[in-house]
Image (tube, rainbow, N blue to C red; front, side, top):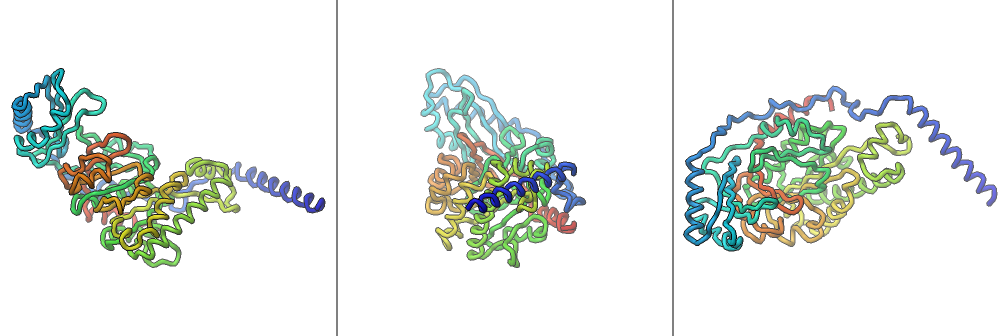
Length: 430
């Protein structure tokens, strides 16, 4: 046993010396560049997106009429207000009213239907009170809604200069500002909305903004599409951005049995990545990649540069119906653990019912996007609050990451635009 101990300590010493020698060698080299494999890769250009001429003039007459009607209907029910002002967004105008002292909020809240009746509006939504302001908001759809184009969102200074890890620009808020977030911070996203309310267009907008900012070495997408036709436009970029199980023909997964295999292999990949992080003595993918770029990790010991992996699942309800627990378990595992190793999930469904978006899934998806849903119960399931049933549809949505939902008009990206972007990437070296 003494001999064994000696041998053991010798091998340890030898291992440490070898590692140190390797590090000395690599320190003389310049930092590792993950983009070198495709150094001539050209990011998609802004002219691939369609430019819409947007009429930004504000219809003052419509605004004044609405203001007068709101004041009138509140007066009719004995509610006095001290001021009213309007903020015009692309599809919605927000009228902020300051109630007179002594007026109860609940009184105004209860008049929601009466206000909608007087204004003959498609739908009104009352926010009482607006967080951080001493006012009550009444949101009313514009008579002539504007299109928020993907071109205007991607071209914005905010998106172009963003330093986010995974920047996603999705549209414009009610104050006409570009709304964007960092998917790496979110970490996972739950999207719900009735058929035809803009979910698939929304997913395209999210993927498009990632393609505009990320190099193929930094990002891989895993696409699950039970409908078979939604993501087929991304097939040309499979050699650049799509990840799949070795030996599979199709990179966009449409078959349920393949979905289960894919999710399980993602769990495996997650465990492998955690082992590498443990070896490298770092806590997350950002620190790990920084260490690898500085050449402090030896590739011979299994270390390599880790791209972010974004899993996009369209029509999650169909998977739960056909595979149930087998799909739910790996998704819950990835959602609980995978953030630190750079794996993020976006799940979309038309039916936000409790047997599809179960407690385990909901608990691990802090960021929610709700397009128009059919009932208040659905709205409560996805947002834990009402409001998504009072949206206008066509890309009008509520985004929740924190305590209060933000109303955003989603950017519109058309299939031909996505095809052009994919073509631009596909013709390059892969």
